[in-house]
Image 1 (cartoon, rainbow, N blue to C red):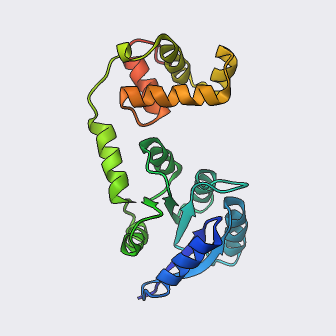
Image 2: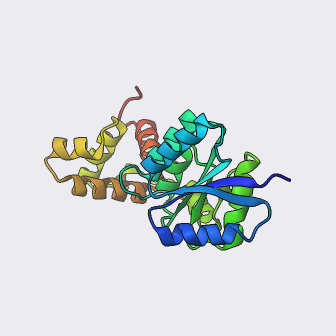
Length: 217
């Protein structure tokens, strides 16, 4: 059987070395290349596409300089839809998972995952299946079954923030509108999501429309 061709993207060389060493012990997976950030990965894949030498699966870190993993994942899925991407990161927050999956990732793993979990995620991606780290799956499940909360749980300022989020405003837009720092706006948005048991800004917007705080577009 032809081995699954994997390309590693992580700004930490020690992580890439560790992943490469693990895959070298497997008969059905081989590492065909690596890059230190999202832009370098896109440059390498462009050259590979010209030579008809694209990998089957890209193992993608999310936090990197120049171009992060989310941006790189979106670009890869737009340019090379046949290439699968598995996110590998240290963060398990539901919103990050949603963003990665919406970008086109076929899996989401934590960096402390067992080696066999990484292999399983690569194989699942090759089969067209989504594989989530068990801890990530639990986080998503909790976000989905969280009890419904009402707008009364929010402070007046948080209600303002929610309305602006529902209007499609970015953190920067919110900061400018309310004359607060972008960091404060980001904190408010996070608090709103946590209080309402929601996993993403999109869910917050839909929730606000459903509750009548804003009108649907």
